[in-house]
Length: 495
Image (cartoon, rainbow, N blue to C red; front, top):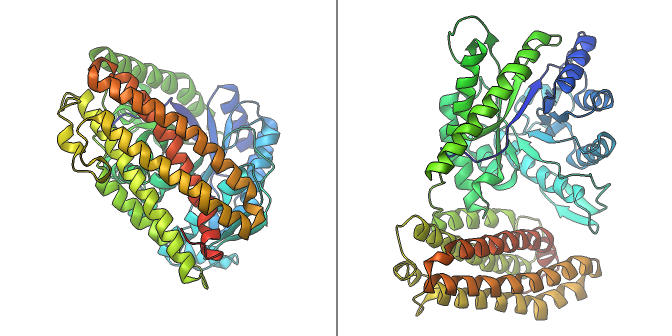
């Protein structure tokens, strides 16, 4: 598996024991003093011997200066996502931007029900978590009032804010296929725990996350990979993370380089100060040095691992199936509205598929598996590229399709939506502004690809231009879907 090239984070997770609260707070302050990056606390509100996780995080934030804080992981069935978003934003403001969000679907069904929480099937828990992510992101992002109607959560003209001072990352505790796929398409990070996922499981799980990320039009490196680990420091080695610090360094370095793990959280008991010191003073700096050294060597040798090609057709098909699931499910959505939703998604998925394939072709040229001219055998198979035989000509066709789609929206779809619902005016104004920006990027991409066909020395310029387009267009499409699919359905807008 690839090294995703993230900076390394080292932190601790401490059981939120009410009985040992004094030792717990001392351990948290020590981690802050030693320069560790992050501290997490379990969130099991049904555990009568545990402190409430969010109260504890808030109190620790007031007693520390630098360390980041996160629930590891928040129990979504017992934490209404809209309120959780407000809580996270407030604590991020008060702590100076030190909050991240670990989220879990809530697998302990009976204890959750005992606290008055919903009794859901495992499949329903995953669906509810996906809706919760939509709600949290919508309320953390400044903008107009938000409307969202899901099966489990909804927002009606809910005002986002207060805006946090930094982007609050959402990390998911995930193990099964559907949760891993959700991580790939919707989360900022993955934080499994040793005991539920062994080092031997990480490759298979990462592959599921990667495939889902590609299907959603994301980069694999968009998702940070974490790992909650535990072990014992001992004079001699006897297994995984069982032995002297040098053994820990070797094993964690391999996890970083072979599986892309970049956030290591050590589980420690309250008051286990010796282990925290060894972790911070011996293990963390040595792993950082070892990983940096090997990364430098790989770059110098030109052997930095690259993710395998993005299989665009398969990825887009998966994304289309997922998008299909998200529309037309509201009771009472008019058939015309459902048809409008499906049409917009079909257009967007086609654009994503073609863009992904363009990125693949450039990768093939870079890897020496194709030249710019030889790539025509790939290009000619695509709808937008028929009768064109160079990358530059392909972009001329592709860019026209994108531009025509945007022109149709500006001249027809957007006025219809604005006339039907004046509250959409700020959203439409932003989308139209983004259309203008993307039009400029398309011109740059077209010129860069034509130059590459003429001289492959311009490959880096072409790749940079396409990545710029990818970042801008994929973010735009996602925002448009997040904001307009629901009103298109509700207002029965034809697309």
